Image (tube, rainbow, N blue to C red):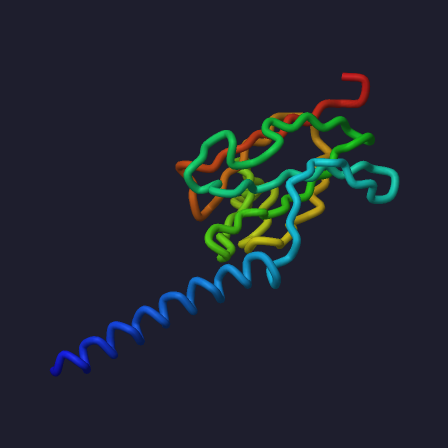
Length: 154
């Protein structure tokens, strides 16, 4: 290959890299949904639903992967949750789940299924007092959370 050909190939590769970075940046800031990390309760009917965020970089965290964590719910007051995935890294959404450790008949008490960045899982209504530990099926050793449900007045 000639020196001119090598220089031209180098310029083309450089332009492609710069263009790729520009496109990803544009996607992250202009096209991707405006994702916030608030945990403000949402009122669905007569039960307040608590929003739990799946945080940025969640796969490398443990108890900080879900926020807030732990969550305390009171039956007939706020015993419903939604999971909102806010994990976008480098302009790309990262898939996660929120899956209960506790099972009934071999199935988890709740499982959001795969949530990409911007996706919401739920609402999940928990009617029985107890401690519900949960995890991400895709990152089971690093993503864990706890929901504690208590009876009204408890």
